[in-house]
Length: 290
Image (cartoon, rainbow, N blue to C red; front, side, top):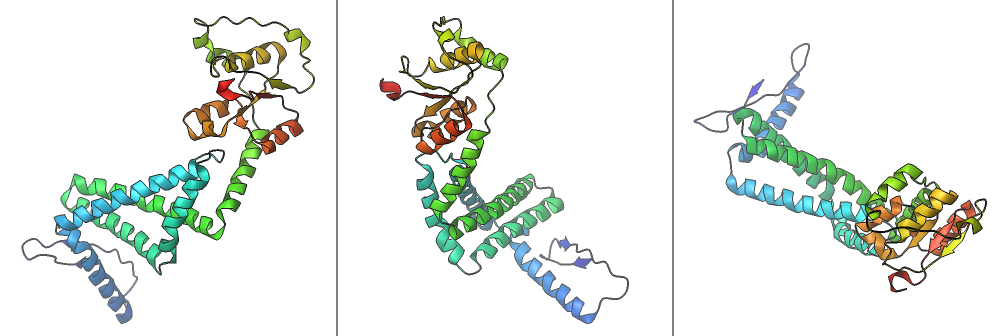
């Protein structure tokens, strides 16, 4: 145990666990003394409740987490969205100078780790709940920043176009391995329609079930009728057409919903992939204007 006094009135103790079977060699004593001095230098401002430093630390944590949120949003943004490439370019410009700065990445991560350690030490010594929250947030920020730095490094090593190609390959794999919901689930999801819309189908017997089809139609209610059409074909003919959607759908909250119903970005590559797999395709050439 090494006792370090940071004030005359109320000395505080920094405990270091040293496991040794015998006496500590002189060199190791010097190293431990250096580490103790460094720890004292790093920990003393927070342990002495320096409000200016705490304000700077909190502002830095907020700024880093805002940027991390932006990075997360950009990487999780669907590759079909027209905003995807623009968002990645913004991140590339923001992190290029940071990565090129010598020791910049190491300094940022070490600072976050020190903030978390200092805050945790202060909490255990004085039971300060604000310090506990600061320790948790800084630890979380350290973990997220480490991951995003790795992603940013890969983005800088690869071109944005190459990164987009890789994501498109993954998207095509997901398209070809899509499994539609069961008929009972599909019918249950459309229960809200039943009190308002009565569905009558004619001519279903003319559609063979043993071959893929290309269904071409017009929207009558800005797409409200499309789930009903899918359900009729699915329930009566065991056909689940894969809808072609416009790019902008995948940039909105509507994207995950239509993707869950088998919709894909309306590109030639995706249509080729669906036809090669023998899937039926549904397309509305005029979109919502038709």
